Image (cartoon, rainbow, N blue to C red):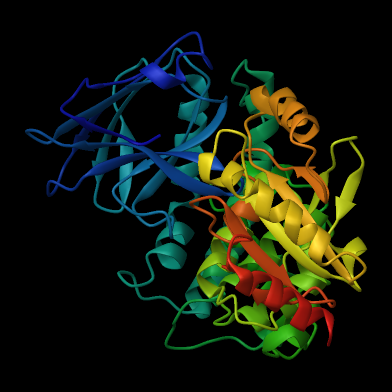
Length: 457
């Protein structure tokens, strides 16, 4: 949920109140311009905007209940880059008083939490390389002046946390991982952005030999809790490939090489999705998904895969059908693959749908007419969970034949084929490929002709 906040103390409360007992209050000023200030949460290694404030008289503010304890971002930048965005730590109950300046920020007063005071001290230590790495379009730098500064800051980072305890064990553990990711972000971004001079692999400073993707990709924890986690992981991967003298090959071959640099399967799924998002047609998508789809594990990954795929779908005859699997009326899982060798007619319906019920007599007659042919009729119910018993009763009362499967509302089959109205009939050939995703209804004799013609092939 994204909420627009205007003025200094506008509430951003309602929907997050169940996650934290205490609100965070942010009082802010902005020195130059009147840019919109945004509040971001971290989600799976990226940031997403949850609120925005248009300054009035150079003042802005947020009042919100944190959805989780951890790192958040406030700034005038965007979701693509750390530029003009700054990191903070909230658990609920804090007050943050800050002023946004050109290329940095300052904390005001004495009420800022110990966690955010430590975050500010870390920001001040790394400020020189942040500017040269992230704000490269404003501050010109080459490796000749950057590398010495980076090595000096890396050395200081080893003792930075000595005698710095916030009193919050969760933060005191998280800040170490955050610092490591920050340094990787600056080091990788510096090498992967335009410069007037670029170093050879042999000229890289010592720090680059100590960072690699396999160390930080063993689990999702370090990547997913850092605001620029996936961005930094990809940047470091490019450097590691250069260090290993691996050529940057296009297409599937290149993607297979990149996948070898990650350990965790979920992170491999994120990398695979980045590759799939760059494809321009469904055939290429299918080829990639057939290899990397096993790494797309989480709900958000599956949702993104579907969002990438949907615009590419043409539903052309001869295209592979969706490999669905749903339980039948007895609870046994039926897969699309198990129907290979038969022409498949899929009927998408629901018990509440009058036009669906009107097709029952014709569907029963069609089943009799094609008996003995390699044709399987499959009815997929889109009824809500609460109507599942009603579905089972209707199957019995109406003596419905064929394979009766239950998919429920908002199921993958309906989403894949954009089933917005029912009944909807789809036909697939003996090899599981599309014949028609909008076939005639059983009440139309053309459907029987279509099925028999496919069965004869």
